[in-house]
Each structure stands twice: as structure tokens, then as C-alpha cells.
Length: 118
Length: 111
Image 1 (cartoon, rainbow over the protein chains, first blue to last red):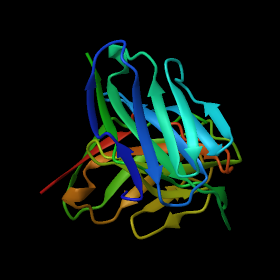
Image 2 (cartoon, helix red, strand yellow):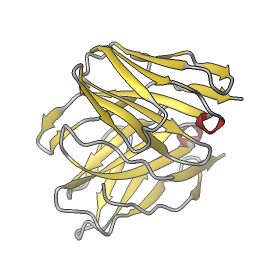
Image 3 (tube, rainbow over the protein chains, first blue to last red):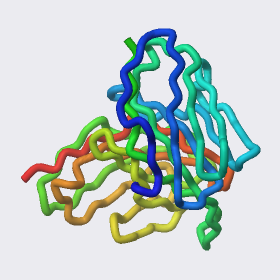
């Protein structure tokens, strides 16, 4: 979805380096998420933020940190990258909509960042 | 979120209906069934969601059994571009709940 952009799209780095992955959105959504995907597996939630002042750990937050600089920006950092953090990383955004079938938050995903840690 | 069970892979001929099953026998009364799909290494895409009534939109139909323990996503006329991994997810329909992705079903649509 062009409304959610991720930079860089590909990155190769070395063990021990600090890496930052950036996500920007123009959808005006309050909620933003970071996921990682390993080959053959589904996405796993790393961190999520329901508004600028809110940060929550997901299923696999160890080794990662995040920063919500503004409503539109949510960055993921690997303070000291290790090879098992090699994965495809996705950012997503959502709003909260209330309809006749309740409140739901359809998530819109970015194109992904392929990170390789050597 | 409750656990779901999906077949790891399915095949479908182009132009035919693709019926993707999902078991969610431990679903709670306040949990909805969501479907997303992921086309080769792209970000997942929302398809449809429902509680207990059957739902239809421009992409697909969702059939939920009366006991809500299983559901089927139907792509009425599958095309090659529908080849993707399809994820069935159950979650509370709250603005503050998150999605938990399993391994999904790899649907291969062939000419």
C-alpha cells in the first residue's frame, strides 16, 4: 500500500551494528505496528503503538526498540544486530472503525524491509 | 487470540471457486473471524471479517458455521493473481486488540 512506506527496502549489515528501520504513513491512522516474518512462518508482532504517547511490547520484543516520533512515523531499532534477526520486517497502520459489526481495525501494511545480518 | 487451524496448502484451477477452510473450535463469543492474504513477500492485505453472519464483499465471501467453530473463505472465481498465503485470524473486535498470524494456507491457482 503506497500510503505506508518503509525505508530501507533492503539492508545488509554485520553483527553488532545498530540498525534503524523507518516507517511512514499518510493514512492519518493513530495505530502503528512492527512485525517480523521468517521464511515459511506467519508474521509475529514486535511492538505496537496506539498513539504517539503509547508504546507496547508485542510477542517478540527482545533485542528491539521503537520510537514513535509523530503520528505518521514509527521507527524500529536493533541496538546490536545478530544473525537470527535476519528476516522480513513489516510496518502496519490501522484506525479504529465502529460499524454495525462492532469496532474493528483493518491493518494496512507497508512493502516490507528485507534485513540480512551477517 | 484463539488458535486457528488451516491446511498448509491448496490448489485451485483458474476460474473455479476457491474454498479455504479454517477451524477455530475455541473461539469466544466476542471474537471475530478475520481473513488476510499475503502475495509473495508483500505486506498482508485485509480481505474480510465476520462474527456469525455470512459476509460478502468485492473480494470474497465468508461463511461461518452456526456453532462458529469453523469458517470458509470463498473466492468465487479464482485468478492467477489470487495465488497467495491466506491467514485466518480470530480476535476480539476491540480497537485495542492486535492480530496474531499463524502459518496460513498457501493457495496456488493454476491455469
